[in-house]
Length: 484
Image (cartoon, rainbow, N blue to C red; front, side, top):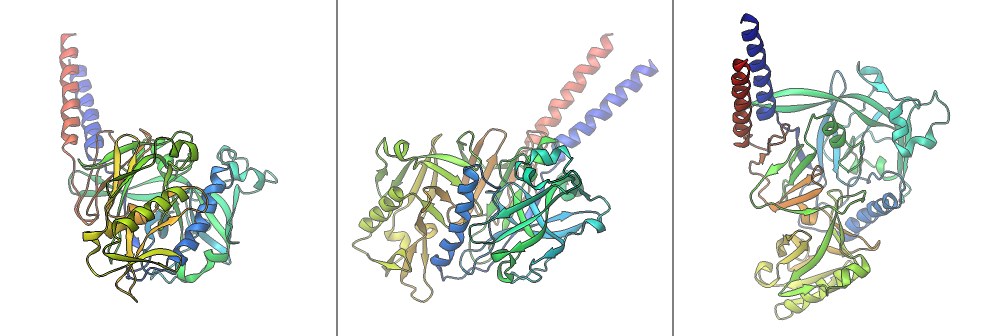
């Protein structure tokens, strides 16, 4: 009998730990910061130049080329870049890294580094990761099985004594090279409704020791890139494959003057979120755009998208504006121009379609809706797709640009001020308009999800559901054991 009660006590203890793990563990979360302040002076030629370089990398990846990391930063002060801090090594050090859903690998600048920037115009202090100063750092050799799994490194291993290295070349004649290491990544976990505990996990990431071109410019310098792509070596894939986090992450990027927002390794819960399935076998987060609604009109006719592949649309937080294939872009500009012909004067400014307006744009410009597969519409208001010029305040320009590479890419112009959920487990993306300065809830139904936000932290009532489910299991087991 004493043995029986000891067993029961152990069983209850195990379940109690399981309850704590299921109902209290939070996803990792990061505060986001805008790289540039918000100013009402769009310079679309600069934005387009930056995005054009990025999209060339997306195309190279689609064609089976090198993993794409974008050149971060922009001379434009209007639309900022979003970045966050990660903590690596033992003792831990903080690194400011660009949030990028278009690439897979997390990499940071390492010491020593040839040609790497030493200062940043973003108001941050640049840090170097030093493998010799972290007690837990391990440089991956070419003989490591992980190295063989990274296809872009196979031609870098000329001998078995070499480091597992990588080289990324960009079309703008900039690039970086380095080697892979494993070390601890530190993050915060929410325990209970108000307690935050430190945790860590060993991950694979890149150590950059050589940079050139735009990557070396101080005006746009960060410590590295935080890739959130679909590959197996993205941080979200590494952590979720070991059950440390759910296989889903979310962000809410604030527009406005201050920017910022939050990034959560977990699923943000919001009743108004709609989901669209990801197109299978694509390296990027690609959705099927089925139609566009604008000013009472619908585009396209039933055959337009399938014939031209104009419906494939990449969701990319690393792109600043939004790019649409020629037939889609031309149709939108035509419909908007016709809709406001009695109230606005169309003109071209610095290569962008603009309008001189003497009244509120919300009153005369139509709302646009991107309608994706799964009956999921992404609504974009005039205040979101129009940008005004500080030199000529009455001039408003369309933020959509004509895609030169035949790809629809929706960037921060459309994604900001929305909850965006990247659900890799269910192969779907969800979104909802949201005030990203408000608190958010994150699901705990997977046993590893939790919720968090820029301000307050709160726990979904589903955690109580898990507690009661586990409690019922305990009761059933106790009754079962007692019968014997």
